[in-house]
Image (cartoon, rainbow, N blue to C red; front, side):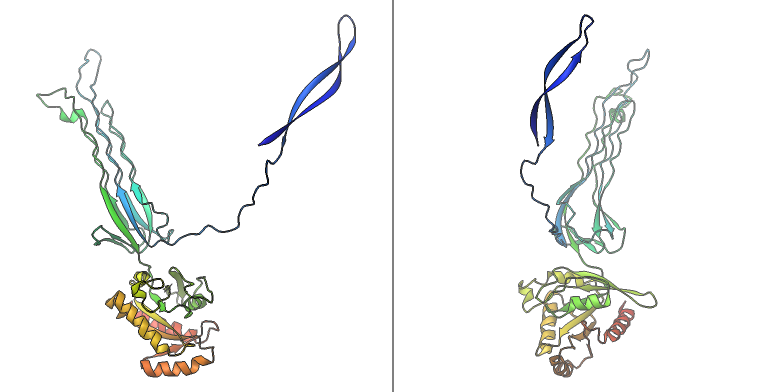
Length: 375
């Protein structure tokens, strides 16, 4: 890392002698280490490391191995055969899933999680130390499925624990096997292995109202207008690639959780676009808010396509209470399209403009009514 420079120079030194004074020229060689860059270093990139949103993951959890029992015999003064004193092994640690608000997805969860092993037993009746449990933080709303697809855990509240794999019990020491017949047993138990189970973790976003709409319908702009959430907003399709959740707070401090989901297109159930798998985040929503783009021709066709994709995913989800809004009413073409939409659907449609905040107070009032009615 450093280049060395050798410097030769003369230095005049006076040497004092008890016989006579003399002066001598002494040649010295000293090496100085001067830091020099070997090559030009590349500056650190300002590009942020991508953080992927993982809402489904298959994990293998293995409980900790139990500690082995000990074979030992007590030796006392004048009694070298005082009997067995081998202690039991410690229990292995469990693997536990615990919900927390500190994590949002499963990008930190390892594919294989192994619990800590228990300590082996020792002589003089010393019991091995039990291992600590391995706690894995998972987001609120996690659904745990076994390999057969059955739901074995629904973690819908904060600080709920799910024991995924139990650790092995510590093995018995030789003192456990002492009997009136066999007073000096030379056997002990090995600590068994912990449970080895595979699970599928799925995330279902906890929200009261979910936004459903086609790409570029203005869902992210609407979420940004009524909450403090900052989803990405851009004039191209599929800007939203993962669910975003924002909170609406009313004057009486009532809060509603709003989820902005990626856009649905025609034949999304055939895995076109982003597919329909992200609709699982809307399964916990009590009310669906259908966002239609009123600036496009025939907005009623958008509604029919959205309902078709919802029915393909889940009939129960398609029958949820719905609030229909016509967005982008600030565009001149939207007024005529809104009248046609109102006549064809024959249900109440709320005209809004998320860009100019037009009629958002009416939308918030209706959202509160639906929340109080279906909570």
